[in-house]
Length: 271
Image (cartoon, rainbow, N blue to C red; front, top):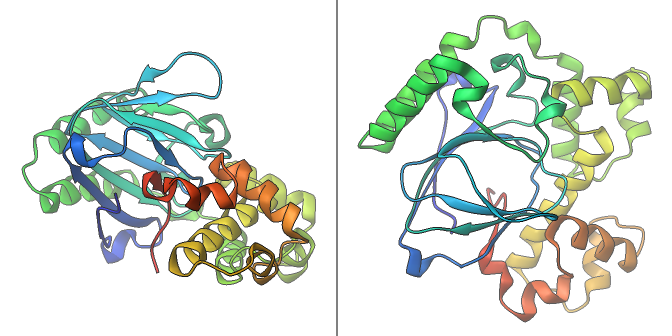
């Protein structure tokens, strides 16, 4: 379920992390997929069959064909309704803000139809991408749309950019106090900036990135002791590690291996 990734153009590399495609027949797709929070927002276009979402509370519902998914702070459970054919625009943690007038925080854990988000232009974007016959053409259509909306690059806050870069470089193993000191900005101001530009607090993004790093380590090499893995990723202790792991994946580290559920998890597996 890794799919294929494609790099953005030079003009959009500060905003778009990558483009991503998934093409699988239903028989090769796990019945239930757990999407693990990764600190990014995504535009998702289903040119194949749709997916059901199983929310933590309430009945499942069919996702829109084309939508934005806001920041995730807990596992997002989906189920294929048929064959998968999906094109994804994945933004950097603070990369989506220049393209929308809707508050980023209001998008958390929500699939928002692209036609709702962008109006008539969004409907045209949907039509273009859904009718495109190749990934190259879909990328071109997406980039033309985004570049047309990128009228003011000053909406990217350099303090936020620097802080996000630090979080990624340290794999989330850094405190908010250290981030505040390094960027010479008051902690409360930094939290407000993050909420506005990313939809997460610095602490939430750091936890997310650290867990992503831990998941990659689990897939690369099964450690002899979970305690060693916890300390390698600077968790206070094993119970802290297990708590965060369950918060983001819905299962324990042992369950991650026990029933081969790792195969049904979609998360950031880039190097």
